[in-house]
Image (cartoon, rainbow, N blue to C red; front, side, top):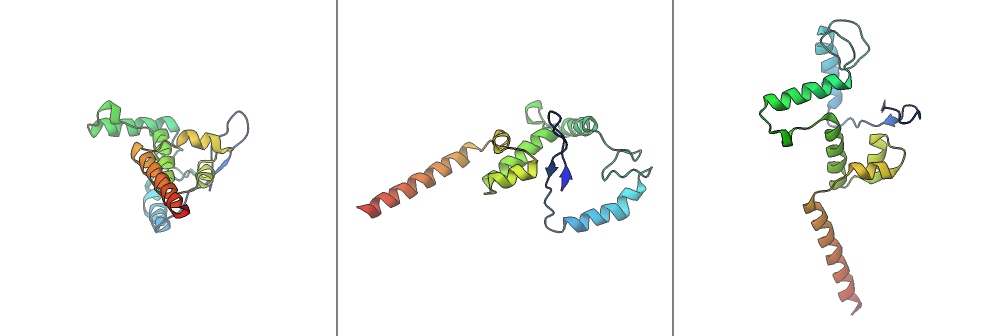
Length: 143
């Protein structure tokens, strides 16, 4: 768990970061082998070359630079915030409960989480098809 940003003076909110599939091993390797090579003794987990906390602008700019260097067209470039939206959407499409996604994102209400989730048209069509199939199956049982 980590603390997220505050909104309208409400104070930091907890955000959950699942530790899946040996991520602990990778983090230990990073902390033992990579992180000590950075200058400074900042408590930051991920830091800049000087060992200081990375601010969100630096991360956003570095990601934009990498997208351009990769040759992505402008309409295919993305930001850290769009990755947050994509993560919420993909988790929802994979069946993760909306309240669980709310907790991971650190939202106070599920309405804010719903604005992050934008299911693909294929997902919507499949959900509709499942609903219709279930309804028709139940209707034919009643006859």
